[in-house]
Image 1 (cartoon, rainbow, N blue to C red):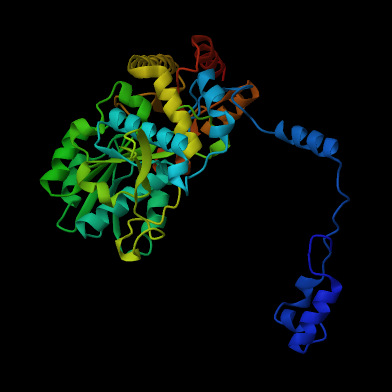
Image 2 (image 1 turned 90 degrees about the horizontal axis):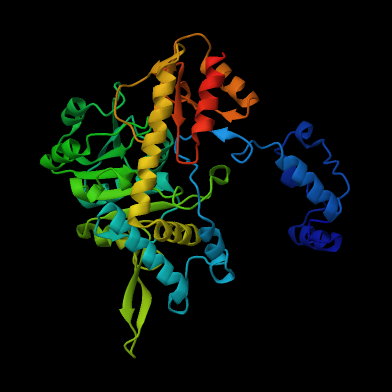
Length: 446
C-alpha cells in the first residue's frame, strides 16, 4: 500500500530478525472473520474535483448566514466588526502560537498582556492568565485550584450551570477522590437554602454561573456572602458581554472568575475552537493555571514583555506545578482584545443593553401567544426558556421553523428531563425586529 513507508524488503528483514516467516503470529488473537475484508479504496480525485466535492459537502451545513438563528446555549452569535478580521488576519498574528521562545515574540506577548489587562478590567479581578482552551476547561481548572488551595475535596456546583461544563468538571475530578454536590435550580436559579445546607467543613469551593444556563440572573452577592461565611472559595462563571450591564465578579467578592470569551470577536465556527478566560484575586497568583505575560523594561530601559509565570510541570518541579495546561489560545485572545478595544466601555454597555432589549421584546411576544408560557419567572439577560402548552412537541416546532429558514431553540429535556417540552431561546443584537417578528409569525401559524 502506497501510504505504508516500509518496502517489501524492509518487512522481510524485520521478520527475519524476529525469526518469523510472516506477520500471522502477530494476528493470531484476532478472529479470522474480522480480518477477512478489503479496503476497496477508490482512485484519487484531482484538486478541482476535491474542491468541488468539499464545496458541495459544505452546503449540507445549516449556517447563520442563510438562516436566522435563535439558538444559544453556550455558543452565541454576535456581530464582529470588520476591523477584527482585518487586523487578526495579518501574517504576523495569523500564524502565532504559544511563544516557546518568548523574548523574541514581543508582539505576541504584548497581545497576550493586553488581553489579560482587558479581562481584569472587565471582571474587576486582580490577575488574568493568557487564556484557556475554552470556558468549560477554565471552569474545571477553577475547581482544581480551589481543591489545591483549600486542601479540601468537596466541590459544590449549581445544576443551573451549563450541563457540558458540569460534564467536563466531572471528567477533570474523576480520579481525585473529590465529591461533587449539585444544587437544584427548580425555579430557574440556584436554591440558596439548599446551597447553604450543603456547605460543610470539607467544602473547597462553590461554582455558580451567571447568567446561568437558563439565561436567568443569579443573586451572586447573597451567594458570595454565604460562601465566604463558611470560609470557602467562590467561583463565578460569567458571560463577559453581560458585564456591560451586570455587576462584575470583583464587585461581589468572587475569588475566581472564569468563562467563555468566544463571544468577544470570535465566530461560532460550528463549535470551536473557543477561548476560555481565567481571572483571580492576587492571593491566587501563583496557583493560577497556564501562563501569565508581564510588562518590564530591558537593560536599555525600553518597555518590553516577558512570560512572567509558567506554573506547569514542563517548567517547574512536578510537585509545585498547578496544572498540565500547555498552551493558550493566542489568536482567539488577540481577536477578543481587538474586539473589546473596538467597542470600548460605552460600546460594550450599549451592546449589552441591545441584547437585553431585543431578548425581552421576543420574550413578551412569545408570552402573548397561546402556545407558550414561561418556563421560569426570573430576570434574564439575553436567553430564556419557554414551555410549549402541548399543542406540538418542541422537536416538531423546531422542524417547522427550520423549514421556514429559522433555527429554533434548544430542547431542554436532553439535559433536564424534568423540563420536557421546554426550549431555550437566545436573542442577541444580530436579530432585527423583522427577524423576531418572523419567528413569532411562524409560531403563531402552527
